[in-house]
Length: 173
Ligand SMILES: [Zn+2]
Image (cartoon, rainbow, N blue to C red; front, side, top):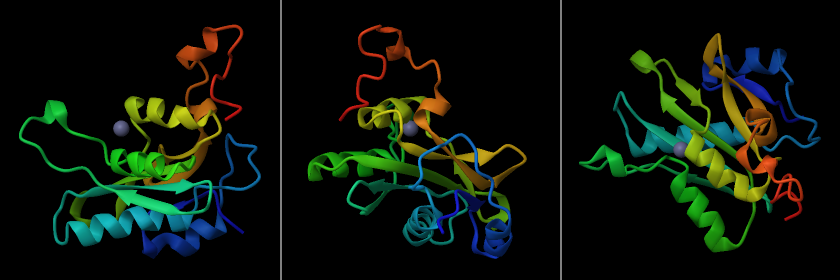
């Protein structure tokens, strides 16, 4: 069984498995799962060992492949990239569809990782793969836990829905 919610840290895995929280998705196969979250955490840990601030993203493709990426630091934060960007570009290079996305950042005092919902820009990037792309979002009361939402649930008023002949323009792809 693939859980659709859980903790972003190995210490809490058992509790997460005991209390899955389904919400907001009717997609039978959950593309966001522990493997995807752990892939993002693993990259953050190995790429930035011992650093209090670290983060990374992991994407699942329609062929099951998991891509990870992280954002380089730049002198001018106005041109910085999101952690998801590299994996989104790699998916495009491979000609595959993105079906799920997770982003994590280190929590305070080495207490695991928080789940970050995709920013508005990354939501637009992910909408290229339709409104059913699954994304991890943090539980409000504990950002180390995640739940899975589809983009259509994250943005029920997505701007392109206003076009009457093309409600979800990328849905058929
Ligand atoms: Zn972003």
